[in-house]
Image (cartoon, rainbow, N blue to C red):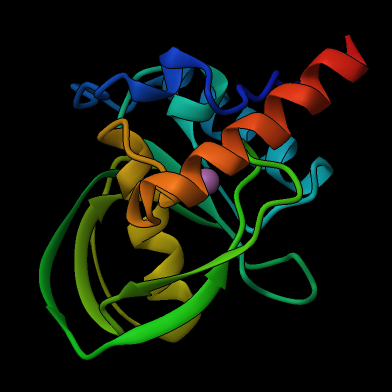
Length: 166
Ligand code: NI
């Protein structure tokens, strides 16, 4: 099922997500819907927060072929090092792309779609993507790293777009 994606500056994007207590059928259905919504958009990452479900679940696929889904439930970053600066976009901020500085290498602990504990070592784009999506779970957006002036300009641009399309 395709879910509706919230757009900045929707205040619901500022909600802090809750830990998933048990990976059951309802959670797995949500995971599947997140991937379907992300692939359809199309995007390379989507957090549950962005579809107004405030649970700690993220869906990522950075592969060209769109066949390497990475589902992280209750993700925790155990180690981070190095610096990576990439231009980021977000399905909640259509048409906005800005450089953000992140850690380059991560080790991440999480549960997968089956509820099994997994440990991931990531670098580059995948690391950036994980940090970006995990920010969503804290109610944080990549524009928060930009200057207030830049953020204000983006807010105006997106508000205008919303007015036009509604
Ligand atoms: Ni995003």
